[in-house]
Image 1 (tube, rainbow, N blue to C red):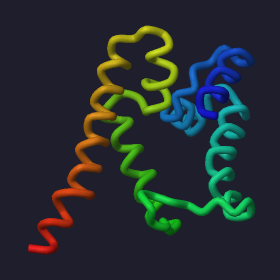
Image 2 (image 1 turned 180 degrees about the horizontal axis):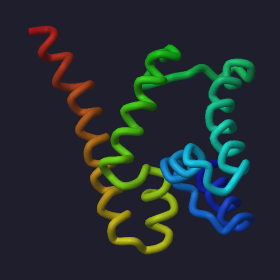
Image 3 (image 1 turned 180 degrees about the vertical axis):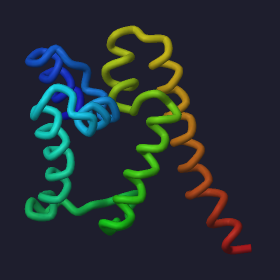
Image 4 (image 1 turned 90 degrees about the vertical axis):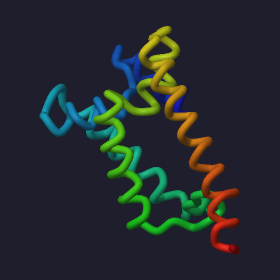
Length: 129
């Protein structure tokens, strides 16, 4: 779905679907309402998911609105440090053969794998010891 949305935005508006760039430019008032519509859709979709019987879920645990908001803020900090987000680098940047995006995506995936390893294998052992 992310790839389809990124392709649609590129085909219709000629724009790259980097969420951090879309948000930053929307806040600065650059280029009108399509950015806000895109962002509202990002927020509305998971809020409507319980109506479709699809719960918020993070690693088999239900996440509350506060957890999701904190996670979103942490992602925002990461996008500033990484000069872009996973959608911009991973979906759009790699498709454009960007070495910077390939490097950033490898780092995202590496840290995600490390996080899963720590949460599933190291922390349970430490708690049981």
